[in-house]
Image (cartoon, rainbow, N blue to C red; front, side, top):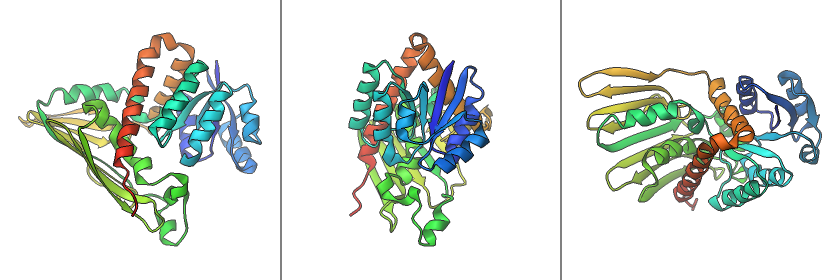
Length: 322
């Protein structure tokens, strides 16, 4: 049995808890929130056994694993403290802002024989292998367009003159960290790191990036990434080969995937999937890594290497807000 606790009381934390319910012997233990009252309300609604009234209380508890879904600006310090106090950690994206921070925390985790990885749905979905196989079936790929543009539920508040966390640069948020990362992961996984990245970002009055794009240049192809929190996309991502095209309806969840052959044949590869199962895949990986690392070590190391490549690319994609 693995007991896990959560940091944060947002919808994403609730989604993780719902997903984790499908993992046998992964048991919800406690919740920590900066607001004890919110923590108590969240515990009542989710069935968490206890509420930690301070971060130190969580650090000193006997919980085995912590799912970190605090503001981005808290990830590095909180994960470092958790790892130094012998807790396994699965952290929401971005796991850290810089590659140097990630490598530092990986060293601490390894020194203490702890699991530490990023909660990114793409890497833990069975659809990842389906997508890779489909891409191998469409011939020579010269171009791809990968998009995740989703109008933020907090945008109306921003227009009213408020400053939601997601548009506050002090929280290390914005469109690239929140949505763009979902585009970078499959690109570096499918095609590797590019020779060059040509980025463009548009900044809001708050100083946070509201949208952006980047061209990933390879020796034989160009991949264009677009992402936005200030507009809603109604189209799909697509990877184009000279023998067919792969369409991905949701790049974040890696579902609604189709392959179109040049003869007109259209095949559904992955249908729409309830998000709780995507989150459940992350929770299952955490359980597998903790309880049977010998069997899952190759995949664990693969997750870490793709994470490093993604962070390296995202550092190159950031533009100074001059």
